[in-house]
Amino acid sequence: MARIGTRPRSRALVRLTGTALAAAALVGGLVPAARAGGAPLSGEFLDKRLEELVRTAGGPPGAIALLRVGDRTVVHRAGVADLRSGRPPRTVDHMRLASVAKAYSGAVALRLVDRGRLRLDDTIGERLPALPAAWHAVTLRQLLQHTSGLPDFSAAPEFVEIVVADPQHRFDSRRLLDFVADRGLEFRPGTRYAYSNSDNIAVTLMAEAATGEPYERLLEELVYRPLGLRNTSLPQSPRMPRPYLHGYDVTPPDPPEDVSELLSPTGVWASGGIVATPEDLSTFIRAWAGDQGYLSQETRRQQRRFLPGAASEPAGPGANAGGLAVFRYTTRCGTVYGHTGNFPGYTQLAVATADGRRSLTFSLTTQINKTVKPDLLAKVRAVQEDFVCALLRR
Picture 1 (tube, rainbow, N blue to C red):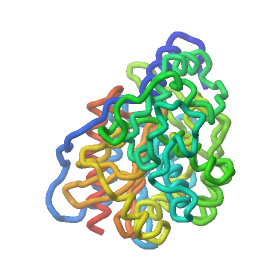
Picture 2 (cartoon, helix red, strand yellow):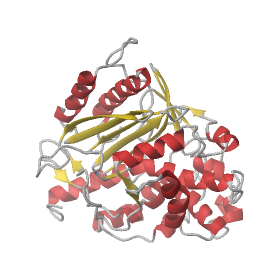
Picture 3 (tube, rainbow, N blue to C red):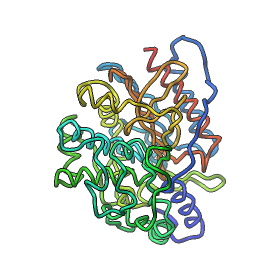
């Protein structure tokens, strides 16, 4: 990491933490399609679309997209994984999944629902009575769908001050909700949608309370091992597993700045701390979003009760709707299910078809959202829609 403590670094850190960790307003609306019609989109066309993003001012130094249909995988990439070496992005490079990590904590919770260890109507009061009494009526279902009303700990002034003062501060991840424990709910549970990092912290604490097992072990037992994920982890250190896609703060006219290991993942934990390779992410999203037996039919039905207009952060391609730790993206070419995420240095989209046979992971090495780069986000969503169309037409 370069220039920590200098004025440029301070400005970048304030910008990054204020957008990646604070609850942001959601993006809506359908981005105009780059190419309409029903003809297949060529690999050359998709490569060009990624290259356009990499060449855009403020765009990512690198991009990699995996399209999987059945057992066949096609990889598209542009730019570099590391500005120093100049090597291209690879499918075995580790990367921060950002809020796609919420799908993993959702997977743990719903697998426990299938096992009878949790119920979707379990409340915070029943499972976590030590949390504020004002939150006790909130259910697991509402937490998973971001209709809980819990205040977002990552927007709390004290939390942001700590991160700005010490980016690598090691938080007690299980005490992150303490930053908002003196506050009531933002609204009556179930009456509104508001994307909140607090929700998945509470989900994870409920899972731990129901089983007596730490979240890290639950991930191993319920997610990594059943799906054969060998390159997925929840690190406690800012250090990235090698090899990895380097993430950058790209803010012209300043040169790109490597922020891959700037922040401690303990400050996001179950809401954004997962690290994985594109290959592992592809395997996970096919099981999580697709009907391949990972969840029971009844739990899958509950998962896919969508709230129209509820968008992930940043918004994904097409029209967004929110289910239980999964989002529906209705594009001009059809519908896919998954999650997005953004974190200093990274922007992610992982989606699959309803049957899980087709999947797309789309990873960029800079943070793009509606707060810091709204115009670029519009371009990204348009390119993502092209890739979804290519996936569905194969």
